[in-house]
Image (cartoon, rainbow, N blue to C red):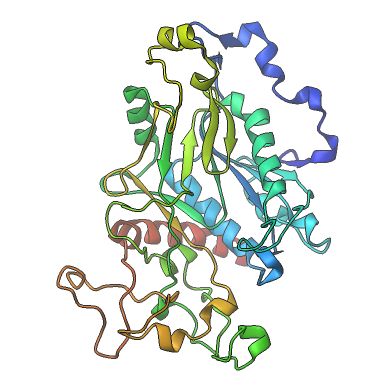
Length: 387
């Protein structure tokens, strides 16, 4: 299958070869930024994913990669992504499965790269020598170097991150046009974990086991019913409207002709940062001894442009004590979503008559526009599979 690449067959000489062909490059139309004239795609995504894996510290096993990938890909096509480069990391964890079957459902839209590279250190974040994602870092660099020269805009996302056009937008493409008109090369999206809504998950089956729950309080294995999408179940964001707290972990869309190195959340080296004083001024920017955020970048408005919904799975241990912490007036973090009804937050109403506290907000554009679109797209595939 031409959309299935074994990384062992990739020759380093293949990477970025197009940049050496002067007939394909125009260096004069964009202030010295090298660009291939005829791009293959307007907007693509790089994805490092696995059918199953262990979270940091081996706390929790995630085994829903097939389901999540199929839904996530369908959503990408709905919002304007043309192609996804899938770095399939499954072989780093098991030889019994892979994401090939899902990728093969989209032979013209998904390029699967077999990527068995293992993470060097999977320790917890709160210890000495905390865990990292070296395999993901290498996959992202490979994707940018190999495929970036052929696209206008590229995004590096996780399988649980949905970049959603909001307000009047039904595609990400008009946002890209707007950014280019402004002279922007990078756009960031604040990313906060959303909570799965209590009324959309399977009824909890409580476990009373200190080894599993890591505490004396009961926990449960959180499951999303097959008839519910991940998108709708986790449509319960912890901030309403604009994300006032964006965390130091935003995600970005960027122009790979301009961004020379990207590190998961940040554009660490751009064309501008490689210029000396005279070159910077000639590029149309004032000279700065230090650069924080790139001056050709900005955050998107989560209200009128696009928002990031982070549907990260809830570990079984993190449900421990939910019957206590999710009650009105309790202390602690409730990771089970109970959304504020319309107007309740503004009126200071903290919980419902049953004693459950409100802790998140439903995005109406996701709920009323994107969820039906996604359900329709997934339904077509289910019918075809059934036949």
